Image (cartoon, rainbow, N blue to C red):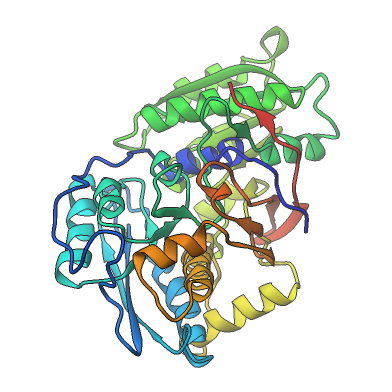
Length: 426
């Protein structure tokens, strides 16, 4: 599997995720506050002779009803396997589970403080929330933190890692072209094709629009509509104003060839339903709706039918050894039940996997400093997100990508998992 050379935080493919994942908040916490068990850089907080204490922060609940609770199951599945195999250099992982931040910045920072100051964890993995206001605090306390790198806080800070790298592009960095190139394959080429981009009315949405506009234009698409206009605080009950503008945005007032949404599931269901009722027959795509659990309701299944979803990991439909192992680990953690797989499980699983891999490389003398030294020279290949390397991951994505399509109640691979050359981000 080739390594995705610089990929802006998937900005093109990940910011999308970032935005798609929701909205963006970069650390607003107090990096220097709080107490530590030892001198900065040498702290072994949470590490004993036979255990490593780890916690998580996940948006189990949110005001919109969107939940990432299965992120916790994914992390637990990976930690359980590590313990079954003897732990990390002889130490078991004492996984405390994930704190629910409710997708609220104040609760996110409070959860970070609790895990460090009260629970005395060595690491926070997974961290999956768009309200990552605890970033500065965790980095200041030298707490290894691993999550989905769809926010700026995963790009640069010394102790914070994206499980598939930094997905948010910065000037002088690069854009991952997985999404634009994947859509081009679905359409049989980008020449003469147009794409409409829509996002929430917040900072993340604005940045996502900027990012993806550049990426799709670089791939050869016309982008006649690119707006971050949907209220970020509540799902619209009437989508007609948005669909009318989108469907007249193509050449000569025609509909665009593709509509790309960088929003969460509740928004996508409303938008996609409205587009289909308006008679739209083009390609519809988003980065969040790869979840068999969404298919339980007829209205949701109909809204998502035919939608192409961007992934930054191997599709569950693949049959690689790594995917078979992932499925077995999830099944075991779920008590032997075959639970519907979703991307949140993968987020938790691969966050835990990256933490475990670096911790193993750090050796028996595990401290914040030794973990950091190991991270600075870490690399491996053939994972579910492609090849990984640090400190590259603080500035670039090392995930590739695929597109899956929902058809007749089942997901199928529309564009296989692969990597694409990045482009400079301006």
